[in-house]
Length: 116
Image 1 (cartoon, rainbow, N blue to C red):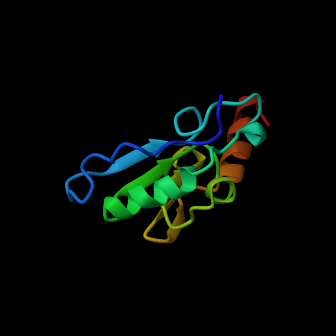
Image 2: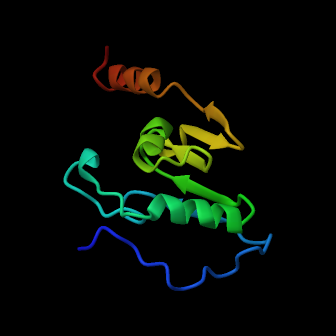
């Protein structure tokens, strides 16, 4: 498997304000790995994502179970809107919002399960 990408084909629908893309990261943009830390980002992927974002007038978002900080570290694309932690946090127009305190919510749920 090659880690580089070829971009010979034009991107469809670019410049059309009626299009928006929501792209899943692990398993779609990136091949799954034995452990999340072992994924390989293909050469040129970040540049392609930024081109698509520009071509769609910003109407691009990444979706992941990873945290936004992890996505940004992995892809280097903090300017792209994204939903992280399975929707528990999201970034829109540069503003990050957490919809819940994931750590506290998990802790409360675990305590309920074991009757603590």
